[in-house]
Image 1 (tube, each protein chain N blue to C red):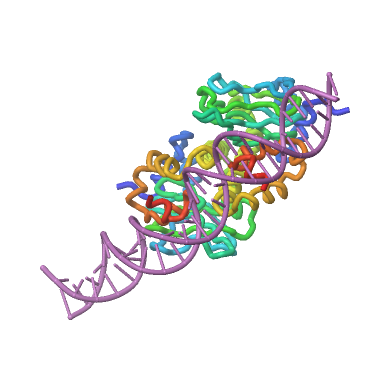
Image 2: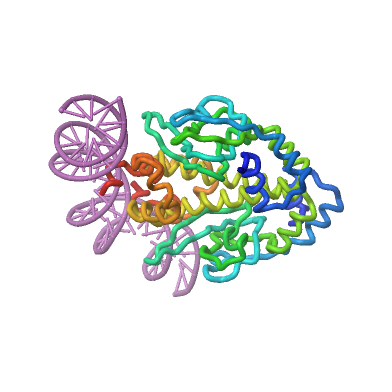
Length: 187
Length: 187
DNA sequence: CGCGCGATTGAGTAATTTCAAATCTAGTGG
DNA sequence: CCACTAGATTTGAAATTACTCAATCGCGCG
């Protein structure tokens, strides 16, 4: 039976191999947290102290506009990293909220510990660089889908990319992610 | 009078301080290249061996869809890094083209040298991590502008963010970046 | 059985695209 | 200095697409 930290270590070792001392060292900086469906992990306007590695569950990262309309920046599930990264990285107040769509367990890494891990072990720098690069590329791909695809194509594109998510989330949430009204998505 | 490499070194030292040996070491891996307006730095379908640090000029990163319509993923100018990063990072064929909107000079870094710099000097890892993180955040902000803003607001938003670019590029190019027709942009 | 949530449908309205034509602008050569 | 041209921009009108708001449908759960 794997414990939570093993999942994290396996995840990191897909990119950089680690010695047992390094594993120990890394693990010490993460804290396990559990959230229920509908609970806020990060709330707009508050300080965002942590970056989260998701062990299980599903979350949405949300921006609320002036009209109270909800826009979904991203979904995150098992093996993904999530947070209001701008707020986390620059130590400013969150402009986004991170909300659970399912019961969710995470390993939380504070900003100080993020810096510490990076400074004390280049492997972690390399790991986070790889994650950041792929995060950038994912966002770039999404931009391209906005530029080149119409609504129904964007929907297909999403299904192809994340087939598992279709059953796990309400269509209305998908619409808020694709940038269309839920009525348009139906047709 | 500053030479090209000094500009690069200044740029890197905004994030990590460097010793003179490190500067020497880093500089050795970059090659100066010059391109004319309208020239292709990277061409869709070809191998993308380099990541480019732009010393002067202006470029667009372009995707051509099946109808031959041009979509602009990003603009890049002085002090920016650019390339078809996916193709560069994964050593696959370019799906995007990088084209000069002005005469442009760059410092080119090959993939092998990128890896080498990262492996041999954690400061460079840290530097590229910072760049990647901000690159990610820039893309995320752009996603949000697609989700929350209408055409004219996106236009305003762009002007506020890059006021200098307005005079430097044709409106039709801006339209291809914002994801609207040039006719719509006029109104 | 009835309630509530999410998904769908319909009709009217608003925004965007398309295609064509007209206008504007910068650069060229006479 | 002017006329000309190519490219870019704007304008107009019709067609398409998406949005809004309201009503209806369908399903799971108490």
